[in-house]
Amino acid sequence: MSIFKEFEEFSLRGSVVDLAVGVIIGAAFGAIVTSLVKDILMPPLGLLTGGVDFSNISIVLKHADVVAKKPEVAIRIGNFLNIIFQFLIISFSIFAMVKGINTLKRRQAEGLAPLPEAAPSKEEVLLTEIRDLLAKGK
Image (cartoon, rainbow, N blue to C red; front, side, top):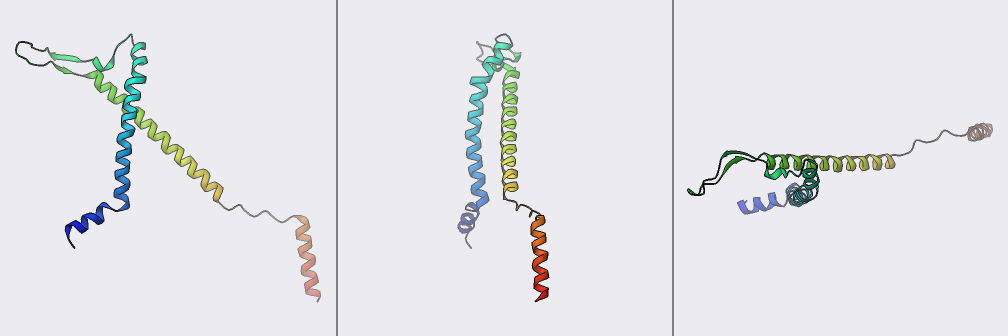
């Protein structure tokens, strides 16, 4: 078996295709969440904190030297906080999605489960006994 044939079989397996679809959708979802955090959530949060833009918060270790053309060396705490915030939103979104899917699966399983048979009524029991007695008498 050639290596190309093996690669073709591997790459066309269902799990590999599912993984590829998951990665692509995950990247698109990441872009949505990034925009949600950057464009929608961070401005009000910055307003609540006195107009502070988290992405600009940093600890400068060495200032830029314009003459020597050396950039500033800084620890960018704000960017780190933004990424943590995005992670929390993504984690919560995935949690909510999985919880919803599990709830739907549970409801579907409950709906598809066979209902227990109801006990026969008193009339049915009496008629069954009469039928059995008549059958014995013949």
